[in-house]
Image (cartoon, rainbow, N blue to C red):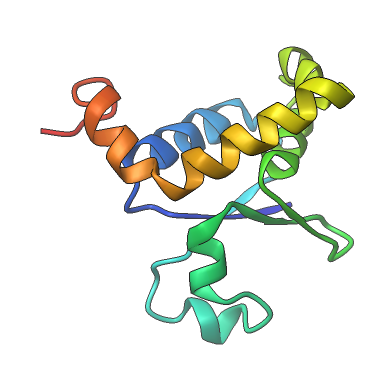
Length: 121
């Protein structure tokens, strides 16, 4: 699977680093949506859309978004047990709302909550 992420977001980058450390069989490719040639290489994804919420692409070409990407990624590396809670119907709705808020304000949230642990100075 491919994950299209914002490498300018320290919290996002930290999660991708942890994910790749867990990816012992190299099943996940990471693509920085800020790369100069991103829209040329992935013309089916608009950078602005990818900045708004996480995008992923399964091996069969299916696009997935938001928490579905997170769940699929951690499932791919075999570390998804705790994320199953987010898939429950009532919790799923609230988690999706929370994710959308996080995605919109991730840089501000990162500045407030992730100063030392994400490498921000």
